[in-house]
Image 1 (spheres, one colour):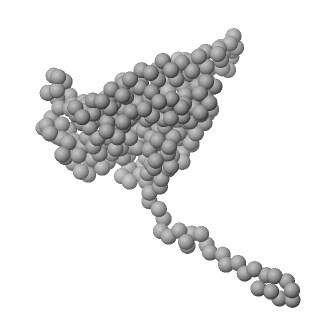
Image 2 (spheres, rainbow, N blue to C red):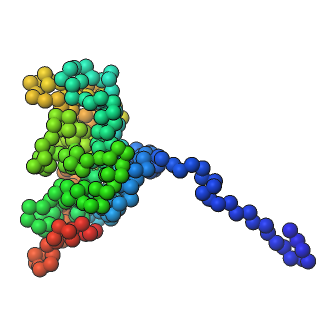
Image 3 (cartoon, rainbow, N blue to C red):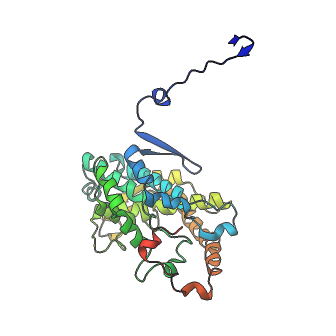
Length: 312
């Protein structure tokens, strides 16, 4: 619009909130490994919490980026990936068509309870590394008080007032005891005892062989380090996972296993784990060992557990 030789622009401003439509109840994270990771609004409260946001500053591979410059990824995105994989495994192994034995069918709860336990599993997977310190596992002995490790810190943070408030506000409300059991497993959850069902769910997250934690860190570490020996067909592996019955090899309780069609994929996972150990992990250990100095045991170096929470 021109008036008296001057030019004026008419700007129409809309309120952004009016253009967005109804409030979203699902949110997505763009991820280089899993493409999109979806979370509900109440789950996002966990991600937005102080304990979880701290993981944005904790390197997944400690000082390995000094050897592999691309390995600067953090435990924040790894935790999101573990939640995504664990959720997919849960859906596969509890699907009716994949349950063929009464000993397995009897431990899987009804639809309503199953929905609750899936939420617990997702939050336990999300928080399984929430107590991790810098420099990965190698520095725990120097940084933490006697008797403490990152699993105990994880337990303390899940039980913290801030997180308890979030668990109680979720739909449905979640019990922190259940989250702790699944997040750190039966060996570290003492004095809490896990039922057979809880043991299977914990194995989905932190199982030594086929756990979601192992799957994600192999894929993610390989991607960011620029190596190929940690890659495997995780889509095929996940789709062939099953809860094995008690009759399998005289096991005293159901456990996580896989159908024959997933053997090749599982071999790729196992080989990748071994190669990662002798490859990328060497960068972690050697990097941390270079930090050692006469001043390591100086007063004030060893953190109290409440101070370790803030360590970055």
